[in-house]
Every structure is written in C-alpha cells, then in structure tokens.
Length: 229
Image 1 (spheres, rainbow, N blue to C red):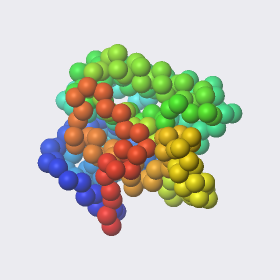
Image 2: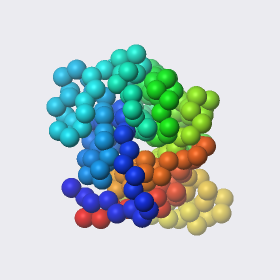
Image 3: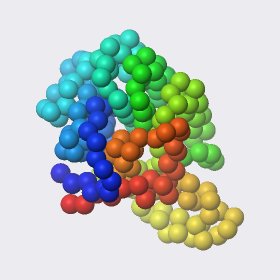
Image 4: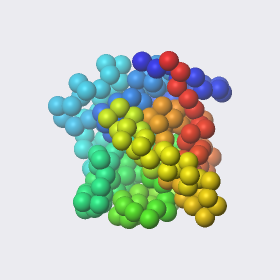
C-alpha cells in the first residue's frame, strides 16, 4: 500500500464515501483509514465485503438519498465518487440516470445532515467532446453550489493508472499542443492525471476543507499531493 506524504496539519475527519468500491474509491478509502480518519462507505446489499474491514459499511442505494441519509449523522465530510465506468458517448443516457441522479441524491443527503464539506469528482470543462457527460457533471456542480456553500470540485479529464494506461501514447501530442499558444489552455485543461495525483488531491481536499467553492483543474490536481512508496 502506498504511503501518502502531504504537508500540513492532519485533523481526523469522519467521512462518508459513495462509490467506495470503484476504481478511485477502492484506493482512496484505505489511504484515509491509514491516516487516522473514520470512514463510512455506501454499498449495495451484498457488496459490503468489498470494503476494507476498518471501514463502516452502510447498505443503501446511491440513487435514493432516503436509504443512507440517516447513516450520515456525525459525518463532517462527504466524498462523492459514483459514476458510470468507462464513459463514452454511447452511455449518454446513463450520465443523467446514474452520474447526475446519484450526485443530486448525495447533495440532498449531505445537506440534510448538515455536512461541513462536500468533495465532488466532476470532469474538465469546457470540452469539445463528451458533451452529455460534461453537461451532467456541470449540472451537478450547479446543484452543489446552490445547496452546500463549502465544497471542493475536482475536474480531471482522464485518470491514468492500472487498467487505464492507453492514453499515455498521447503524451507526445499533449507536449506539442501545450507549446502552441492557440491550444495551450485546452491541452492543459484536458491533460492526463495519474491515479497517484488524483488520490493525493482527494486526501488533500479532505484534510484541508474549502471555505466557499474550490475548483481543482488538471494543473491543480497534479500539484495537490503525491504518493510515495
């Protein structure tokens, strides 16, 4: 297990996580536990065993706030990681029925529980492709700002890691586009983020809550934290 090294004072938090058995969540929860935080994670019935033993499982439906709202009492932080795996234009309908619907349910539950800080993994925007995906995440961001004033929004474009390495072949193209003034901003906004950088940014966000709305774009995600083995 990687050991996370991030500068700053660490204050234990009680964190509620949705999407805890997914690609990012399954890696994030052990790190949070390792750093002394208490973690409760939402899981579908029968999936509780997929969570680490030190994590407190909460059985419920990510699309229905009523199934987990009461389990959030005492939590000061909410981390929402639910989303359709391997997004593609063919999954446009799911972006609203899963990504957006789960985000709205999470926001409702967190608002009801008066959670201090909400951490939401969105997507880089604007973007010339994946319009439905970006639109669903953008709508969720707007709802979050309206309901929960203190929040952190992370905007990766593609997270590179185990099973997700194919975009590394694009790095020469990114290098070139970042050096052309007309394409520099877009290339940086839609750049690649490693799973280690993403985890570092998430832990940093949890341990240093935002006052107001904080948005971390790709350059900020890369700089937010690092994993050392």
